[in-house]
Image 1: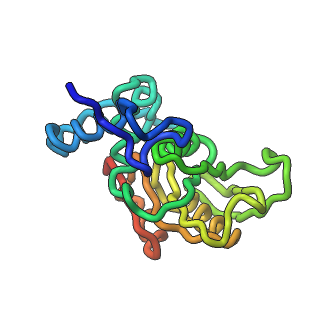
Image 2 (image 1 turned 90 degrees about the vertical axis):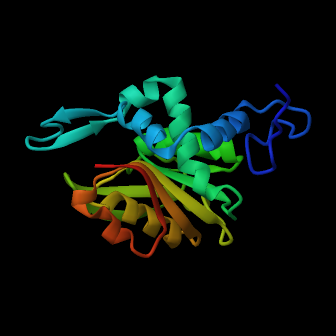
Image 3 (image 1 turned 60 degrees about the vertical axis):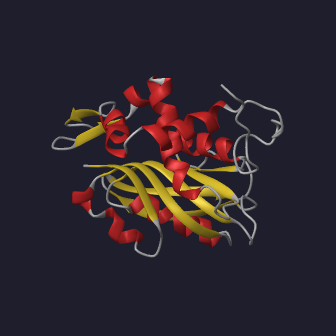
Length: 211
């Protein structure tokens, strides 16, 4: 098989783009060309495990650990997350603590962009900006360093799950509070019945799996 080359927007900046066999680009090319979209989503869906009564009675928790345990499925999920944004003028990726770190950092690495962690209070060592918000299990706060973004940044916000939309909305507000623009939000799983997308009506939303 011939060589595939990394375009400027794909892969780590530490890897030369010329004369380098890029397995990530090859993989994305193959899933675009040969795999029907519904079969791709079925592969991901089969790796999401339901945990009843967690973290509280009456809640069915969507467990992504089987997905991230399987390297091929994890790679597939990451590529499907970033696929709509190839070639877009995105300059940074932000992910929420904690599972947003998994997918956000991998998407940032694939796109060759900075990753900005949005953290729980008291976890960041430098000066921070914060946003308080309500979520499906109570209330919480997100923080980011005050120098995390530039005014010209266009940010892709990523998390594993969109439920009521509280965390995602707070993340977007935090990015904007720090002077950047939210380009879009992307999620592995969206719980449609909780209508979290309504809170994100001002933003483009991309979700892989809908329950």
